[in-house]
Length: 91
Image (cartoon, rainbow, N blue to C red):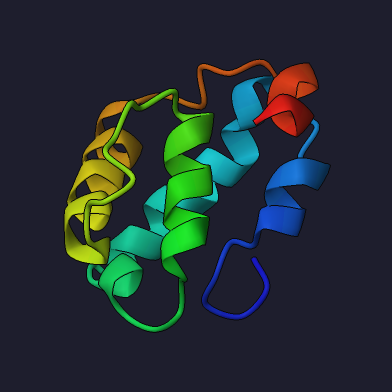
């Protein structure tokens, strides 16, 4: 993990099954910094990208706080990204 953030570039480069390495890093990041997604560390567009990887349907008009709540739920409840790695560039 580069600094305190799991970047989009790191996610795209992750070759583990279901991006499990990145998913585990996101889980660990949340344990250390529970409010990281509502802070300035992540942009709203990055939250939308992450939600897309988890296959979450969301309203693009939702504010960053609502997107953060959804993302935290999926990161803490799921074992990895459901979207196969070869489809990442389609999102």
